[in-house]
Length: 480
Ligand code: NDP
Image 1 (cartoon, rainbow, N blue to C red):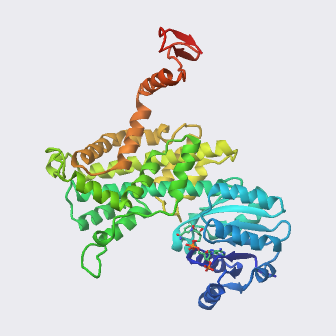
Image 2: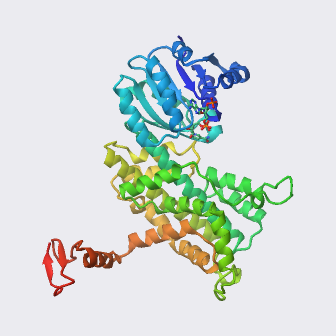
């Protein structure tokens, strides 16, 4: 065969990736379990480039030059295994299979090892940018061996988004590292969106802005340090009017946020690694709360008669809060949540021996992906200049940025609490910063309690060693 690369799985993402490859001059073989999708692609977009239609896996394999490069873009999970089971027996040693779906990174580690045993090179490729990104240039996070990247990377780098001449695609590290990073990217996406939603809620509730003014506010903010894809589309979604009812679109959408699971995976993995990604965790939990319709109704009704005094409700006058406070707080909270995400990548890299360069992430997230933002350029610079800083919040630029905005962030959380407006991510990231800044934490008491009931021992501030107090005897301290 003469095709240079194949895409199997031609729903919205795969179809657009295939077109992107063809538009960039590559000879592309296309395949889909349901052949009509592949036929439709060639019929509709065949004029865009050099496509070879493959009706079966055998035809797909035959269409490709060697080593074969096959991009799998199907539903993550069992579908991916089904596709691999069908393809792999047809492949030759050295061929490359790249899973560009949203696989769990542990599955990617497993598949990489299983295929390596058969001499097949496997890449786990994180892709962000949605439908449009796939067509016009996504952000791409590949994890694979260096020799595999040598064969595959040039294709991915050409179809990715670019900032100036730099592709938003680079080898992240071995096996599961690309999908790990994509997972954290999605986690950050969750917290970004929830922070925007909390900001919107405070602008409309306690500050009493009508929805079109909130839309205008976000539009104006997109010309500031907050410039980002998500802020830009927030203005568009808020400005949209429902054709049926003439009401603001946001008022006719059921307020139950769904998830496909990458946020949950991020939090599960973070718990395993012991990294506090509190912003992402609260954002993920907030979606769960929103979807808990029955419980929301029951508790709302049960608490209805409770009078919590003049403090409760949404009395705007009682709240000392400005639109500028919200802008500053949104930026600061975003920085904290990115800092937590980067910490998680560092820890995952250390734990799995991946040797990921955190500066690579912010660099390839600058364009193409859903969390693209002006902020990411500054993060890249800070991480490059201070590679050993234990937190983004400890770099001079971001320490100053957060310190300047801390009073505003505190006013936002205060106003949220006073007005009874739930702001779980704002609250969580502020608590995180306050905890990191604190001279002493009440963790000392927690250690005391653990030692009391479980003889779990403690260390002292004034001398080396591990100690236990004999609480049930004479309370003498013994060295453990
Ligand atoms: P879907 O996740 O809806 O998956 C549909 C595709 O999977 C179809 O091509 C379908 O084939 C194929 N498929 C499902 N089950 C099987 C099976 N058992 N055997 C073979 N093929 C199967 O499509 P999307 O385009 O939305 O996403 C593709 C991948 O990209 C997913 O892993 C997704 O998580 C990821 N992704 C999606 C993004 C998005 O914005 N949508 C962004 C980034 C990544 P058939 O036509 O025969 O049913």
